[in-house]
Length: 405
Image (cartoon, rainbow, N blue to C red; front, side, top):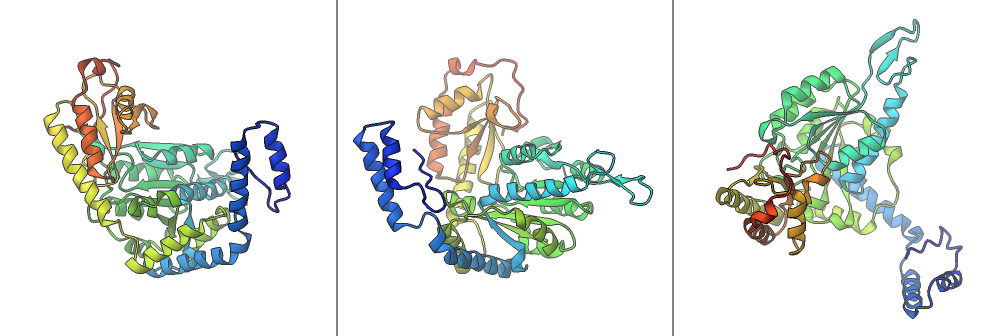
């Protein structure tokens, strides 16, 4: 049941009670409404009376983030996790792209003001290496972007040379770099990130998504932001995978210059959670920065050992050499991701089946590797005991490119 009383609560509780009575005489419904009413009397669900506190928390979070990352306060845009940042940035980028449509009616062509002659192509579209985070596909597609998909190299390594060449030639509006990548868990090497950013075309935005924790050393975001002040770079950080705060949906978009941040700022959503901002501020203040929790890093390493041992002793299984919160597992024989997901779910264990991914492959499943290793150990025990009957589902399906050990 959803109750929306309007901004000024013009839809009174008496009306709500009468309305509910049209659908049910159940006393539990009336009791539920009474509890909601009691909670509203004690909590400002309209945010009006807490508005000064929200502004103060937002300002404090921006100020301490700017100090830590060596950028101006206005270059820090908190959002609803990295998902919110991706949606906001791509909305702004789409507006920018549309404004570049020339007189030919074709996206990507600029025309001279004097002669009307076509000049060099304007940036158009979103580019990323695939497979990658599903939100990039969905958000870019929903906004009408052309999508350039550059397949990952063997072993799911980032194709730095091919990516850079295509980027320079196509000059997309946005390039998305996800490190560590989701779903493979493999990071982009520092030298490959620098290669892409060094060749970033003028007018192209680069989004470096560092949502996932990384057990391997990586160049600090501060250095990247400082190095590329003259280019349009935004780095995404989130408190979800680093600190286990997914339920609060809070993240940071850090911009290398005020110009880019200023263009994106008007498209920010309203209503960031006060508790989330306070907790994020406290983490930054007490830790001196946003770093993955030690428990999360230990879990990733522990799960890595378990999974590598599992594929060593269970023929046909493979797993990416991950260093982040996720990894891809390839399945043996004709084992189907649907069957695997169903069998595991029946035992209270859950994966993302490959047939539901943006790059469908029913021979793969995505595992969450940032949690307690006991969970992955239990999963491996079930997978190791799958019967031959459960393996004969989809003959002829394509095999994933993951390596077995």
